[in-house]
Image (cartoon, rainbow over all chains, first blue to last red; front, top):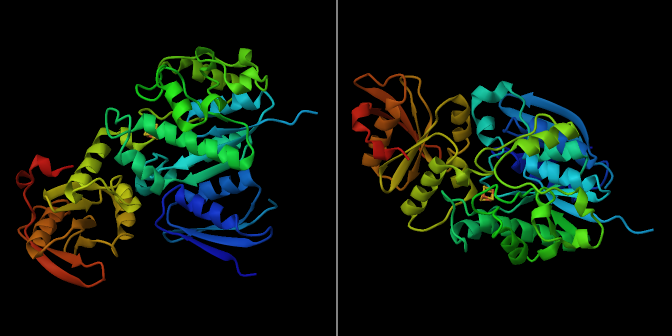
Length: 76
Length: 347
Ligand code: SF4
């Protein structure tokens, strides 16, 4: 399944989380979401947000100056 | 069986809101957190930008608080709506451009609306009587309750005994005897309470929860308004005020110069919106030019930026001028002497 992309580059904490939160609200359980960020803080914040709200982090990756988080939307 | 009552707690990420929510949660209330993002929030931005701090783990304190409490957190983007609070605060500004009382009223009002939409019963904040000079005074705390529309559905557990009983207390949803009567600026009772709950590594913002309480930040914002001829800003403007050295050589333009690599990387992302300048012949910082400029202005900006590069003592350095559309050209300039950079250029 191709993940739904959230481009959060050039956004600073907590805007990447807000973008993810708003996108995830539209999606069903099991959907994969790929978030690309340039704020390294997102590597902590997005997983923390997922833990609080019951979503699963599938992968986090650093690629040059970009930070990637792939998550799976949990049950509402 | 009576239904479990539900409260929404304003979570700034600081210790007080953590404790307030915990006290209410311990009385069997279902608590959800709400956090408002105004664009001015301190929240680790500068750490994220500045490379030096990159080895330290970064976290969003509001998310951290929610995780400690095991509650959901709703982060609400209020950037646009909040502008009216900053532009026209009915109760005025504090020591700097911080409209704390209007800000509190606005946030509690938003939380109250959220409660009504989501079937929650009351609002919890970490306010303490006498803690902040503007919004947390004995005479202004009732103003927040009244003008937000929350009225007696606003509970301040840390200071409740200094205030009239609220609806949750009168209805017996909350036991008033288990609430606190803190007042004043001392942080000791909060720290003792945090220890008793076993909370560690909590955040304690010094001046306030946002950049508007910072004198230097406020003066840069005031400069922006003056240069634009009216109170206005976009998110990018207020983000850029947190980054770099800001110098205004002429009333119609300013130059934002990165202070280190992390800031340079951040400013790179704005090259499609602003004219940018960097040294070609020597290593030096990236800079953006904000304003309508002509060639003479560019030359002045370039020689100013050259002052902050490794070629500062050379007779001539080569700079690159790049337009937002991506067209670049070299420009040879003589770096300005520091004695030619008047103090008033620094914002
Ligand atoms: S410090 Fe900033 S966020 Fe906090 S109440 Fe004052 S204006 Fe609002």
